[in-house]
Structures are given as structure tokens and as C-alpha cells.
Length: 375
Image (cartoon, rainbow, N blue to C red; front, side):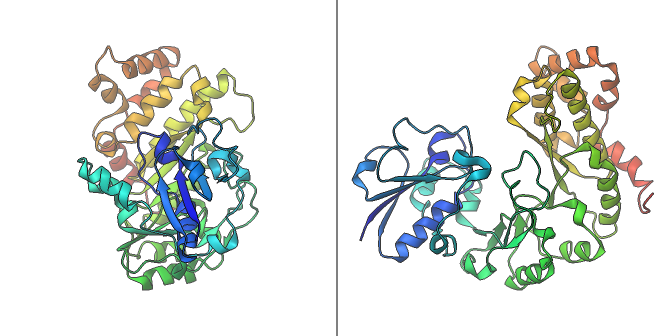
């Protein structure tokens, strides 16, 4: 029997940690299955006392103390270290049942200290895994850009814990696999609410996919991606199609702050902010919610404060559905940073005023008059 330490670096290095590291859970499950003694380490002390130490992180900006990675008993991996070049787990660990109890002690400590249970729902309530891996889109910014297709990865039974009441799927582009319906049927037969954490590819929707997807017992908000304003025409056609099957509010990840042409000049930053606002308007029209996701280099933008302000507004549905962007800035006070960011941007680009004054309910009501037929 070996002594195994599992280190979730994001757990240690970030203020909030609301999602477990699946690789850590799989490694723990594999070693516990062999009879090894496994401990979740929540610090970097005493690692030399373990036969093996597995260290994983998802986020590139999570810091790890100098010297830890060079220890002879430490193996490390994850997108936080290698981004799109992260090595896979060994097959025997990749395809074993995750250890859903790895984080139990840490979660209980948080709950005992007064934390809300809802902040730890993915640790307590969900079976988590991949039915498929990969994507054929090859987006330059994505950790999956080295794939050229969507591949089958594991059957649902491989990670489904009957004791857990919900399912969370991490698939990169589920609808891009030819056997999507077969897998969706298996999810329905499981009888548990499920969600796709990474978002679905709106561009792949057709009548059959809409019929099956929107009749499922879905958990929470259906989430898609709207990463490029140049896809607006196609996205709008798909939204018209979607509204034939459901009136529920959909959420769209809106990626921004990434120059696909690699120029990163002032014109790009201006156009990127306007492209983000254009996407927000289109989503309003069809009663959908944006969720702004910023590429790290947005901090280099002369308008970085606009990215922050738009995200603070759009990523809070309760505010977004009630207040325009201008009203949000005023709510924070005329001396606030976000109001000043908005004011300065409008001074330089007066055409921004149109987007500042858009209100969700009004735009949605006007948009409803034009729905139902593709142009």
C-alpha cells in the first residue's frame, strides 16, 4: 500500500473554488481501488512524506510554490500548466469511477464555518464526466484547438453515481458527435436532471436536436456559446429556430478580448467592445442572457474598464434584465469607476449611447414581433 497525496492547486491558490477537479477525483478513485491510502492535501506542507504526489490545476494564473514541481515524488498536469498541450491521464485512471468523496472533509470544514451548501453543490450533488471529448472548430484561444473531431470518450455508467441526484457533463462539443441522440437518450433514461457545463454549440442546432434537447429534463439554464460577432447572422437564424421549441431563457457565453488577426491595436479594441455590445443586443432580442468571458489580454486594452463594467452588468441576470447599461453605471454612482469608464468611452465614441440605453424587456418585446420566420 502506498501513501498518495492529491493536490488541487486551484483549491489552495484561489479565493473561490466551486467545482471539483475531475482529474484529482479520478486519480484518487484509481488509487483507492488499488488499496492505497489517499489524502487530499490543502497545503504544500509535508509532501515529501508521501510515496506519490499528484498536483493538478485548471487555471494558468494559479500559483504553485517554487520547488514543488521539482520534487522527485511529484507528478503534475492539467490545462493550468500545459494549456492545450496537457497530457492525458493514464488509461486505467481516466476510465475509472471518480472518487466523489475526495473533497468531503474540505467541504465539511467550509460548511461548519458558515458557508452556504449551494456553493458546494457540484461537490455534493453531481456525477461529473465526459461522454465525448474534443471539437472540430479549432478556435485559436481554446484548449481543445488540437482536436479535429468530436470523439466518444466514455459511457454514462463509467462516472454515474446512483446516489447523486444530478449529472454534470464537461463535453467540449457534444452536439458535434454523430451519436448525440443515442447519448442524449441514455441521459434521459437515467432519470436525473443533467447539464452541459461547457456550453453547447448553437450553430449545430436543427429541428431534431431542438426537439430532443428542449424536451429533456435539463438542470438549470441551457447554455450555448456566441464567441464571434461575425456569426451573428447564423446565430439569429438558430435563435428563431429555437423559439419554435422553447420559450425558456437561454444563456450564451460571450467571449471577448481576443484578436483573431493577432494585431491587438486600438482599432481592434474599439471594434471588439462594440462587437460585444452588438452580441448583447441580439441576445436581448430573443430573450437570452449573455455571460461575458474575457481573454486575459483584455487588460492590455485602453478600454479594459469597459470589459469589466459590461461583464459586471451582463453577468448578473437580476440587474441585466432590469437596468440598461447606463442605468447600471448610474446605480454605482457618478463617481464610481464603472460610470467613468462608460462616460469616457461614450465621449470618444458617441455611437455607444445607443447600446447604453438598451433595456432587456423592451428589446425583447420589440424582437418578438419579428420572430418566427428565417430571413
